[in-house]
Length: 218
Image: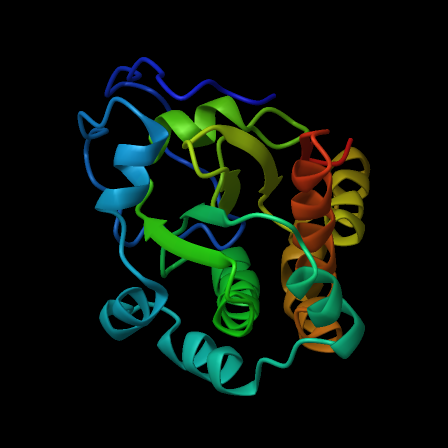
């Protein structure tokens, strides 16, 4: 579900965002008073600043940032996109899904001049997460939202890549979420960021074509 530039703030009593790690490092008690996505984006940190301040899962953040490589075909597709695009990311250092996806998206942005990225914590970004929920209805980190030059929400990617999200949904149905959580890092290590980068580039392509999409696979 895409949201307009202006959105109402949610009450501080709204549920905290979910991350399968169970970590909530960096959460603030209530959303800030940013009234537009553009203002929220402007209030965010660039990735290097966010990384420098990350304490939870620091080894994972640093390892993925240093090792991130973007497939040549995906990089070429991203560089061929028309227009300029901003990526607003709601993320937190203690979330394993954030640590396994954001470093690769940041590397993509570093290599594509038409892309920019800012990171906000779940407190300021609460309304964004509430508007872009997971398939089972949770506000979650990370949430990636693509903004056009006017600050319009023109696409999103929620929590984790589609294939891994499907495995999580199957595990939830089967009552084996504990096993999924234990094995999730192996999936991320084998994938090395390839899936999340390809999926976000597909969202960007859709936005450039005037057909916004939000990837929260069901």
